Length: 98
Image (cartoon, rainbow, N blue to C red):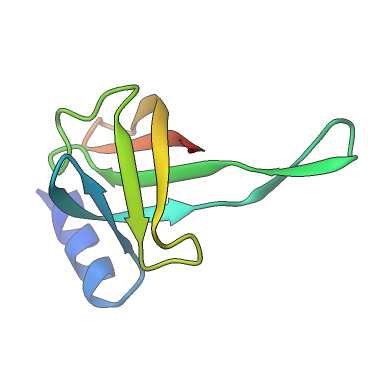
């Protein structure tokens, strides 16, 4: 349960954003860093979110996620990859903006 307490503290400190998935709201770490593509001719955002595995145990590829409280507030994304981090108590989902 240690990772859940870490996320709770980060949410209280304002470091996380809310994600809505299937009617559930979960505090997640959301990132949208720019990545150079086409041999440096363009930028593309690589959207990801990290969260405790226990918060979204049924999250699956193809699910949609709405992100609030960031510069991308109100945007909807589709999950295209999910990976466990470390001992599996935390996960990372790669997202595509739709």
